[in-house]
Length: 173
Image (cartoon, rainbow, N blue to C red; front, side, top):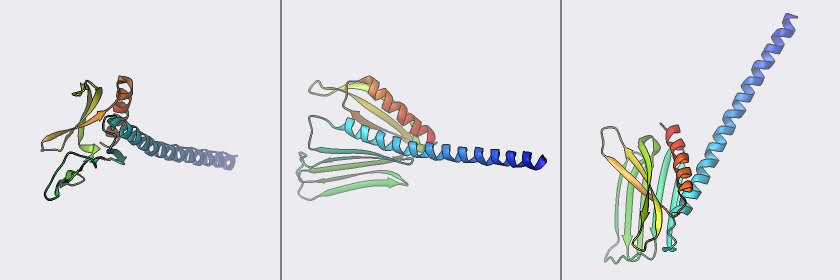
């Protein structure tokens, strides 16, 4: 009888451990998929309908984020191409300019993000949109705010994006 009881207890423990592993794997997979879906949604929302030639990308990878803005029809005239960048760890920025081409990359770690907010904005043509503000501050350093334009008039969409980004931020602390 004791052997049967011991076997049942062991089977119960093994079953519980397997269920926990399965749950953790499912959470990790859904977290990665959610980041991909969130990256895709933000990339789409950042596209200004009045600037269809701009290529915008926002990518979340683990606890790292990157924003890329490319414009191959920019109003830029240069005698020589210019490239400037700054990097400190996994965060930084870079800008490239040459005739008709503008490119800017911004990288940051979510562990350095101290706050998220958004504001309604209106451009020079009276187009309404929202600007997502990502405040970043390293210990002992200056604070920097990244602004992501989200071209939608639907505040519910913006709130949803911000809540999902806040979950990413919390998971990377």
